[in-house]
Length: 227
Image (tube, rainbow, N blue to C red; front, side, top):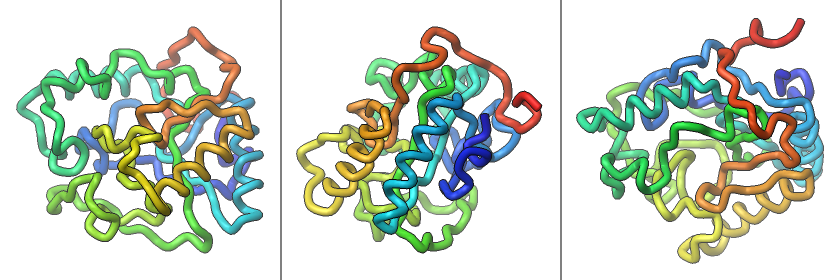
């Protein structure tokens, strides 16, 4: 179901609908910039959002349900070692030939099962964000917040989709406010039934999954949903 139908207050910045991602172009299967989730996951996010709103924050989702065709697009991109147009931002310290071996890219994704979401926390009122302009100079995703691509979220120590060990949720180099922000995100979502992927501070799966063994491939669009 569409997350917006369950909780329209959750901010949506659907990165794979835009060229601002590690591929550098809109990803296959993203026909509309919208978050689709299973009903239990969407309702659990609403619970987490209510807890954050009381503290003056909001959730912001970057990706939700991801069709298998999008994952296939990632795989084709990862196998094309000549395409490194977004390396300077998303994987500056990782050799592209190691993306599979290091676990950054896989041929299946939990996102395709509909209960996994990539997200962050934004302080309210949310500041406006500017769109990425293809070809603009790129800054490393692990650079200080003032140097990274501008994002209206709390400083989590890295940008979203940063292929780097600094993105590991409990990386000891992440301290102070950045650590507190990661802990706020994880603890809030844990209370709502979500489990974090330790290698990515932004990646959470609602458990138990409604479709634990099914990898869907319908496109991300309102037309894909039951009327």
